[in-house]
Image (cartoon, rainbow, N blue to C red; front, side, top):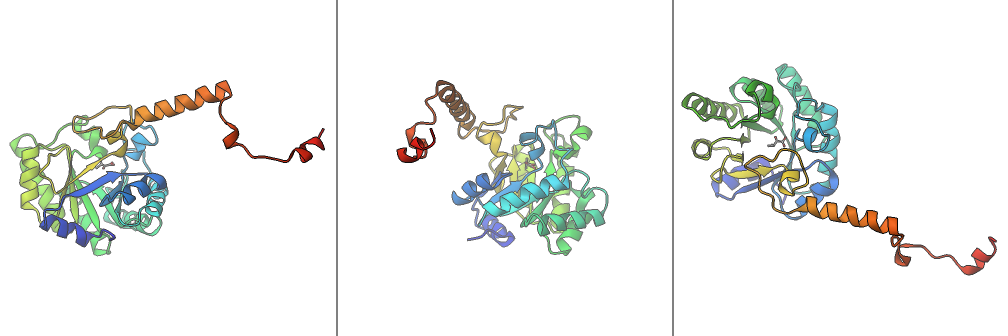
Length: 275
Ligand code: KIV
């Protein structure tokens, strides 16, 4: 059954936890979809884990559309959410609508995600009014890494915690269908989750959120950069890749690959005529 925004609300009501992972290509999205993931995020984290940038700021609309197209071809049931990259919505409500529209029309996403709370509520409202589901993202919003002075836990003091609650209520009021809570103390995330009727999806926000999201390279151990505290490695795929690539190099060098079973035959009569 295809997951829709209605499914998400129902899952929150029924306390059925929502699962979300990032994906950036067809094959990975297809595997996730086949094992039953509820939502796939084409995150602008692709700037870091796919393109090798130090942050997400250089990611373009073209990057996002390219990867979203690949993911939507692989995902048949999961709700595909495409991230709106830095400066594709902060500049104006008009830009936000045009760029959200492109992610839907060209990328074939099922929803878009953008970062921010009270400050981007007008953009969320306009996009939702245009018939496009929006997932909001508050707490540690990586596109504001320079304003935060680094990738830091958010909402730790009273003022910051109250501001986070205001942001959560503002994005809900603006029409968001779900909200990602990133790097927020677990007890604060629970308060936000209890206050909202829309689902919260946590990353570094504890187990009381309505759902969880991780970057797939982090949870499979294929990204060798910084590993945040909230990441759990569910499988050591990075190690398996090293082993596999190493074995390939060794066998090619030794001449043991390709073996007879990997080659194509030709009749000896034909071969004789070639000498
Ligand atoms: O870009 C991304 O992958 C994200 C997740 C960290 C939630 O926004």
